Amino acid sequence: MKRGELRRQLRRRAKELRAQLSDARRQVRDRVAGLEVVQRERRRRRLKQAAGLAIVIALLLLIRCDCGRVSPEVAAEVAPVVDAGVQPRPTVATASKALEARVERQPRAAFTTQAQEASSWLDEFRLQVAARSPRLARCFSGAEHPGALRWSVALNPSSGAVSDHQLDLVGPDPDLQTKQRECLERALSSPPYALAGASEDALARRVSLVIEF
Image 1 (spheres, helix red, strand yellow):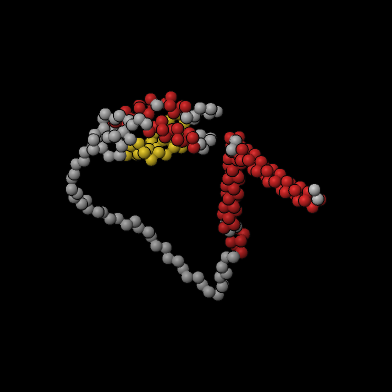
Image 2: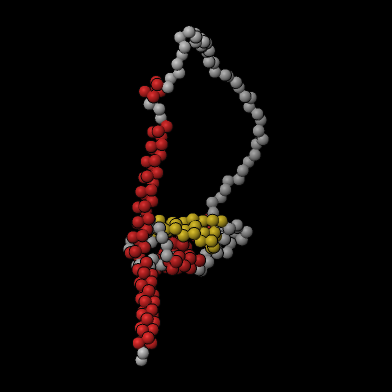
């Protein structure tokens, strides 16, 4: 084999090894970035940066407020100069008198309103959500500490179906993983809720609950 051919093969092999090494590094970085510890540290770093930025903004606002004030010494220096030959115009003290007025009462039409009845099916809905606690707890298997979940949803009382889920964790770690969100929506949606106290023509309404796990 000639030297030129051997060099070309070595260069081609070195190029392939560099490409493989680059792919391996990229895979390692992706795996490290997906670790929960790394994500938590990144969130803490962002919170520290946001807190530092808020402190700097507060200091800038305080400095701006202090600059807007005029000290008594500066006020005395910029006080207007009055010519001794010109007599100042005397000020006339006017006695301030409070204005007194009375507004006659106008007749108003009387009307009656019906007292809004409490939704009896709302208590049934809360009880049925609480009964799904074991299924909801499985969505947080492996969690380091207990917490609470704020759930807001559109509820159709007549059919018991829910839609338009809004899930927010309450606590120091507000992030909710995609798998946990899908698990919670399945557990909270199926099967539909049986609300015996709801009428057939009841309108859908938005309901918010706090669920502890």
